[in-house]
Length: 407
Ligand SMILES: [Ca+2]
Ligand SMILES: [Ca+2]
Ligand SMILES: [Ca+2]
Ligand SMILES: [Ca+2]
Image 1 (cartoon, rainbow, N blue to C red):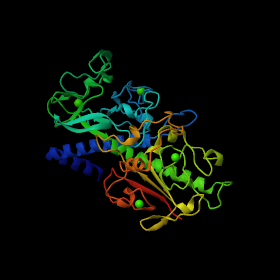
Image 2: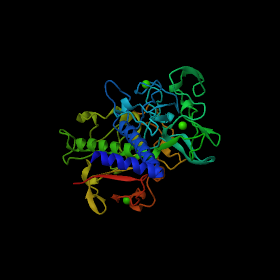
Image 3: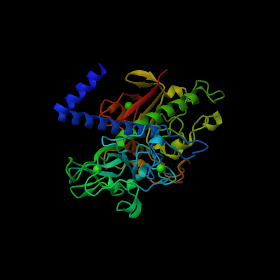
Image 4: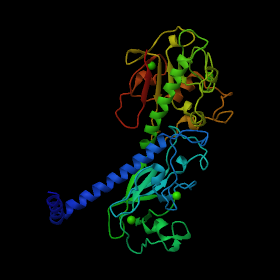
């Protein structure tokens, strides 16, 4: 029977090479997607620890530039190397020509020792990918690109001999030189560090296949992890023994972008720097270093039921008409090209984990701030003026998402 299957597959491929080619392409696309999912999975679970005090969700591993399967400890923005499959813990990802997938990383998503800028919902990738011609940009905000290099073309040589490499401008082993794997289409050369890159129809001189990892692909999943951790911290706050309230209260909100709680404030920022009636540390709650170091408090909306604060009065909170204790709204990535206010409002002091001591926003400025993050299609949320909220109406992948603690 096995022989029969083998024979029929063989004959099938012989009589229909177009279908066989389509199947190889489909397998190639699956391999690319699996590598993308592994990169995103690695990134989402990054967390600070004693060994890696600055590790944070959202950062990506450097490409593997020396061919050992492991990420190289440092990399330039837009570096070109293999997918670091050993670091990701996946089988070696090979394309339809048997080549290990290549990978380029956007500077803003590199790890802390090369990139001490924050990574949160307002961080965008900055790699450009063209489609068919340099006139049409597929995106200018890719966080990573995964390449299937395909079989060698033209003068490409892939042995281990050391030779000049146009990608690095140095002499390296030919099988580590991107120019021996990636080509030019419509004057755009995929073997140039930092790009721009191009996806185009295969030809005699070009056979690269690209999978673009967008800011939305990565940020959407990272936000979900961050929101879950914030909910757990808020639950821990509510149930902590010895708190200075008798109603399992939560902290009230920060209404003016100081990162400090304001009494009787029920919506705005989550005061990670100074909660009230008790601060986090006083309740034995340790905030993860990555959370404070990456300014997540600036981009995630927080609302709390007035009767679940130390006041124990002032009304209830509702989501979709039903009672709630706490609401978080993650904004989703900024629309392409948009710079949202967490990145533009100057603050003093500038250390990310410190309270902001000067220049609080007034109520109109606070509303304008949040209206850059909340969708106007959800008027119950967008109003930023009462204790009623609703599940966001959009079904887009990049969108506001609402998280709630119910009674
Ligand atoms: Ca390596
Ligand atoms: Ca190629
Ligand atoms: Ca405040
Ligand atoms: Ca409302």
